[in-house]
Image (cartoon, rainbow, N blue to C red; front, side):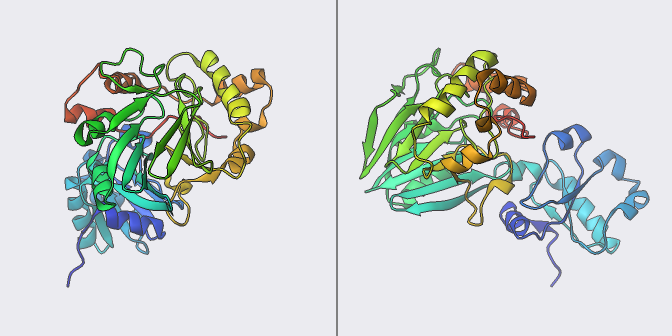
Length: 374
């Protein structure tokens, strides 16, 4: 039987994790490729030749392709890359294509179980590094930082025979559209966010309060106001053992404090959060963040996590104990602040209601919610 020329996103991710994807041929334009491309847990060689430069000139480029490795062709939607894979196969190369292209890859999620008691599930959007957590106890579920595609979150709760009763956003997201209010609408759950971040919101919500304790099932969530990435950023400590930090602390970075245009003020808040608000917490506490920069942050079980001690040891910012130097390091580490992030903030405040095509467009690209790592 002839091998299929296409591979689904799920099949592709398994091959990527196993180190079987070693050469990618990306046919998108150079700007799209430089801004956002597929990366694995290990280094993957990638060749970018825009479709309009490759088609009709194939033979002049053949020397650039390996004969000893499988080639995965990729484009925006999967059509031209499928044609290219077939062309390369006809010329003797082992080539397959990612079905649906970057469109399909952008919407691919995988779910991993972090713990059984209580049940904590991590839903990871592989292409964007967006992470949602669902905690289930005694038939009751809470959701932290829901992504825009809500079906898999609701389906997970149904499979766990749990009713979603509370939905939390740790902060006003800027890099992706929150599905929190949509889940609350569909399930009858309450929607919670810090009122500072929700200022100007065109919807009602339950305001989060620093120091309050929220109970569900047999679990408790202690609410810790942890401003810096945003002024309303809030973390949740589950049963004193697991800390959901949103974007305040991520595995490879710290959440950038400039997305609201107030880097100096928010950086001061971030400094106080890291060293004072979190300073009294035990280092053995496990952190589950809301974003990852790359698949390299997944551990052998596919989970993005670390301890607070590991964050304190590995983060550049945690090594800087004086605020002037801390601020200087932040300003030297900031990446682009895309205009679309301001539009996403407005969507998450209910001030804009774009159609699905525009929502998808706003979320295209690499997540830039953290600071560049040296």
